[in-house]
Image 1 (cartoon, rainbow, N blue to C red):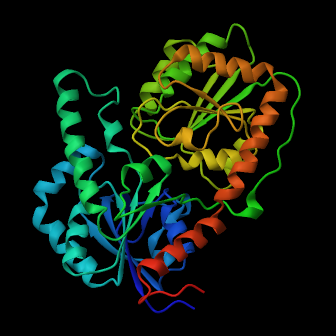
Image 2: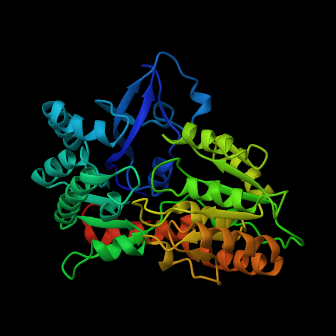
Length: 402
């Protein structure tokens, strides 16, 4: 049984609130809860006020989970996040002190501009820190939304930001989303450890089913954001529609480029072949979508992530995968073994890879089986074991795993 510890969590996510309920679709909190590191959880969250909401439509309702909420000023994107850093400076420090003083252990998801306040106060108060690094800032300025002098300034900003994160990771237990981030933020005196915050349990793994004939159903799951390569994926389907008239691409997710991509589909006359579904719940609806899918594609070309956990979800569903040689992906996705890898941003390579899997049922089956074997090493049970052993090693005086 765990000691009656109080865990403070900051995930750098905005939540909606109508004054009664605080909600989000992101399930990262479920993973942390499942680790059973403390008796109670306090979460500091950016609040976006709304007049009314239906809590039944959201994956996470903090009040229903017994989480104590410390509200922060709201921001909807990275620019507002940085602006909030200066405009709400005193408020952030006050909330950080309140947060840290009422918690015994602090879990911070970084990089985060606002997270700097929590890290600073936690260090001053000598509170145990668990830092979860999820993004590669060195890739951030490469996204297509930055042009000209703005791109140069963005590169300088993210380089300085990256160096700040390296300083942060000299203290506490450092967990990273994938091997590339582990390499970036490890040194002989302060090692980092790769983990995957997924909820997939061994019992959830699906057997691979061989499908004969040509593939028809292609799936993308992820954010509609710069660097995700979704425009290139739509173009690839446009290139293939004459050769494969029955090809269909389903795109599940939400984000700032959602409407722009809908317009792109319409402009290219692809409404028959591309369906943009918007947000799809990770529980029932998304699982049903997986069952209908023949090929999964993750075409990221410059998104600053570590290792996308959606890859593990796709493998657990028994799906063959096409991905890019970006960030931490090549550390686990081996070309021709558990997926096909293409050069980020290369339309021809992506088109050729999709064509290859459409016509080759045997290859689809081999890749799906390879992914199924790989994901068995990264189930929730494995992650719990890894993290509990690390917490015991770093903070033996406060936590003894069962």
